[in-house]
Length: 58
Image (tube, rainbow, N blue to C red; front, side):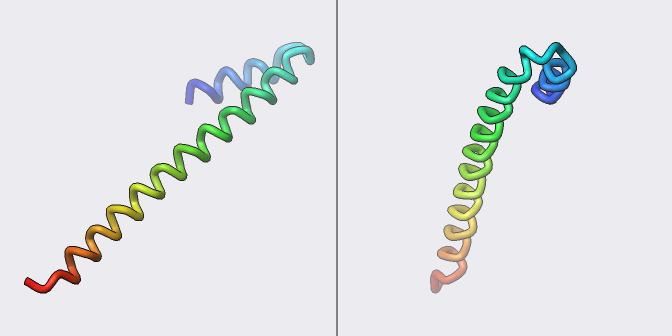
């Protein structure tokens, strides 16, 4: 949330900062994609573990 505020401020600022804000946006998107990927992997792992436990004959 804090990032979006700074991005808006930078976008409203003089054009010289636009390039900088674009770099920040790209960095943010890369970070977010990495985080989402990590969460997805964790979720898959949990699902997989649950399936393994379900399939175990007791």
